[in-house]
Length: 218
Image 1 (cartoon, helix red, strand yellow):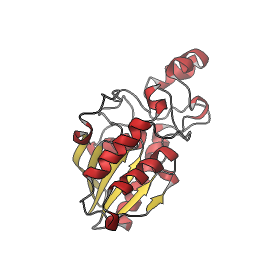
Image 2 (cartoon, rainbow, N blue to C red):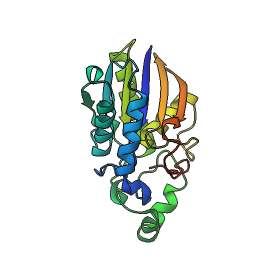
Image 3 (cartoon, rainbow, N blue to C red):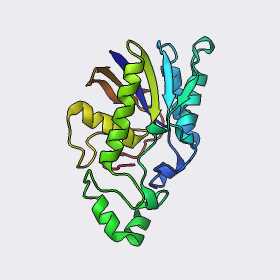
């Protein structure tokens, strides 16, 4: 069995602006930095064997701040993995929802149908994202049996793991909140995934309220 502590990166300004981040490199804003530091302090005394992160800067910065908040003797190097990147949304990457509706109306209509095989031009479908994510997560679990890993990644990636764990269809709106710098724990035994806790934000309770991302796919 392998335990994974799954983290969505801290907040960015583009999260606040409701832009599609996709695979554009956007740094954390001050709120995202504080969220990450608080989560790091919460995890400071945990026994963690390995840390892996998406190679996008918002995830790398989150991982760095998590590491800085741990006891110096227990800090771990972070392995970067491009397979943990957010969904590639192609030509709409970096755009606000309202701008997509105006500039790409048919593409937007197709997007909000939440169909697993739809992809924006030059982008990636949910089915393609799911295959990439689960191949990577299962490989990490196999490589690190009987260990505890911190995985810093993105909302779309975590949604694929959540759906897989509960046997949910890939089509349809998101069924759970995935807050920035929330704490999610799973256990993997072979191909079986057990959710231990999800969307735990007790370390963030006195910070300003975050937008809800349940119906968002970014």
